[in-house]
Amino acid sequence: MTALKPLSCLALALASLALVSCTARTRPPGDPNVCYQVQPLKDGTLKYNRMMSTQKDLEHCAAALEAMRLKFLALGGTQRQIVGAYQGNFIFLQPEGIFTAPSLESHRYLALVRTGDGRLALPGAMPQ
Image (cartoon, rainbow, N blue to C red):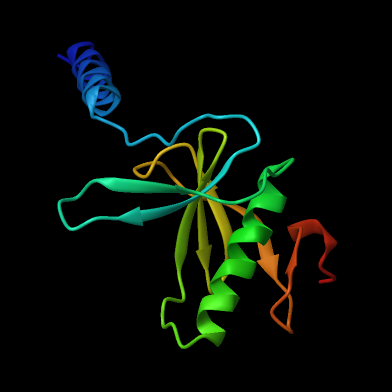
């Protein structure tokens, strides 16, 4: 009976892994050097608005999105969080910093942190 318990746990773990891998993932476009601002629509779909200039990496795309966010706030906008996309990764601009993920459903990873005065910096560049 004790030999069956590890096997049933393994079977359950494999079944849950198979279920997770079968769920649909929302993935952004993977166009090279193209930065998008992502706007969720009322019907649940996403609209990808292409930014004017090309960006050489994810950090520059995040900075362009941050500049756009600040410009809209200066014009009276109220949106403090923005979603973007760059080369197959989503970018999430939040008050805590900039996060990235390969899909909307994936875990988000910290890409840039905010300094005390609101600027963006690489996480390792900030003094402890």
